[in-house]
Image (cartoon, rainbow, N blue to C red; front, side, top):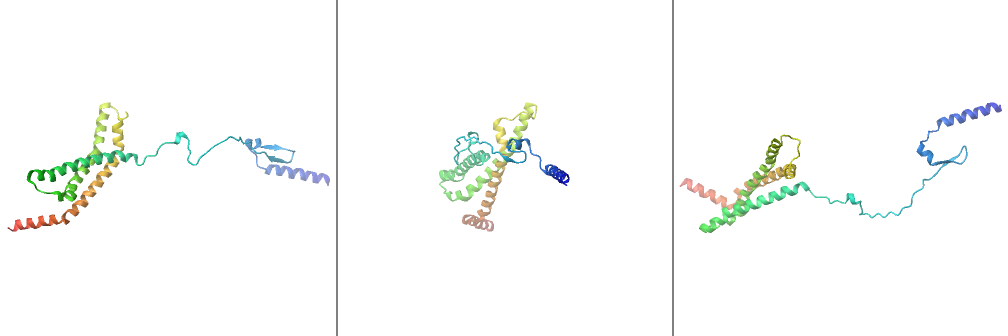
Length: 202
């Protein structure tokens, strides 16, 4: 009987040993065996180094300023310059020149008529700036004899902002459509229509 019980104990221990999961070599480093049957985890030794972290501190490698819409800066500057110069030219031609030469006051044209003449010119100029860098890039590639050579910095930057130029051109075109629809609502335009009708009848 004792032999049978000892054999059963041995087989039970072998079965339990087979059922135990195998440990990794890294886990064995943290284990210390007190006896043949019992073992306990050994806590890893932590190096107590003084670390000072602030909520707003970050490494110097990550300290760079985030720019808001970086690709929109050049197109907005160009659109502002073009619209300002076009508005100044149209103002001088439509308002100032008649006032100086024949003392006719056309200052009422500034809000609608002058602006409505500025918008399509700015829109078509910005649309030309969308397609022009592609032509220049083709000429540069033909001159270099290869398409794998890098473009100049100014041309590369210009080509990367073509989408922004196109969106600004579309925006000015929509403004031109709105101004064109509101133009016949002006009282002076209705007077002109009545004057033209009177001239046709007469």
